[in-house]
Image (tube, rainbow, N blue to C red; front, side):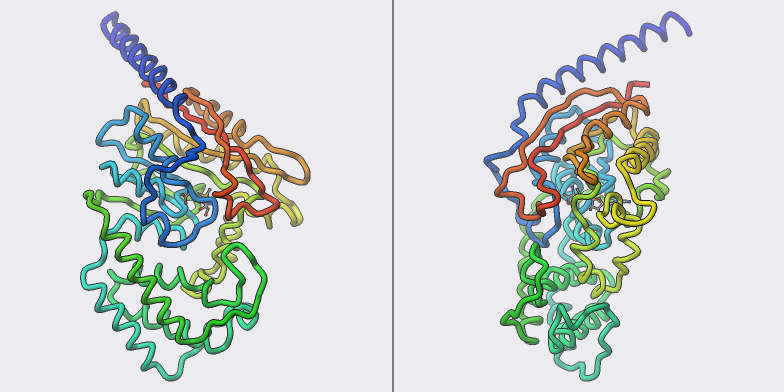
Length: 391
Ligand SMILES: C[S@@+](CC[C@H](N)C(=O)[O-])C[C@H]1O[C@@H](n2cnc3c(N)ncnc32)[C@H](O)[C@@H]1O
């Protein structure tokens, strides 16, 4: 290597190390608990999702790190799409990957415009529901326990009508339909899995659907920023081919599934059945699903170590030089043993050559723990920021 190129490399290294110290200082000044939320965006509440980010979290990373304007922001476990929506709000293109079809539906709708003439399709769905006489009820396991017969018929009519609408309207209508499924079921609430007697009848399906469409349209319509492209890929992260994004990712901002804590497939099981997806296939590939820890050849904490190693190998080739990786992760309890998922993530990153820039901790406020089931009971999360080296 010539003297000139050695000098230029050492200049870049110096610049990177200054940027790292400045970023670490900015990150250390953030109150990661976000006790007082300044703004709650309407699109955050269009549909429930377990263990989702409050938007302040990805916003804090996006606002504190020196990101290149043309970089793409990736959330490899994008869930309901909080990171991609916050990236879009700040003028970045983004990429989200998630295994769960309801997550991807949410992320797509939250980053899209209100479809033109959607009100025509909403009226047409309701008209079609009124006209459909005979309808086959889909063969969904244990349906009678969770849905009264007249509700089953109304939901079958609703989903068939939605499927008959123009393709560009279907995501919007399907998300509105998905958001009412627990409300019209016998399930006590989104977080309580008991079947109870509820005062719902078949006509409520249509009225709740209409209201849900109105709420969704108004939450999407208040966005005034340009809707830069957000690509959402429904896939197992460990198997997906992301070569088209090689070297183009400026920051990865994510929260992975915590082993043996939440069950995203179970939470959305009936939504998936009604919308024509197979929740059992999702369960098989879901990282950390509790079911994997109670079977023959059961998963252990080493399984999560291996999964994170595979994920970070992918990240390394996707990141541009100097790209950032931001993780928020809580601990797990597996067969009585407490597992430090933060350390697992950090070590997986360091094994692929990433440099630790910042490590902090946040308290998960009890008022925001509506999805924190007793076996999860996560009170603290680690905030970890790493960086790909300059060359
Ligand atoms: C903590 S949640 C992410 C929530 C997200 N930050 C939000 O704001 O909604 C973790 C996500 O990982 C997803 N997931 C689990 N296994 C996966 C896999 N093998 N590939 C891709 N995503 C997976 C789950 O479906 C879930 O949405």
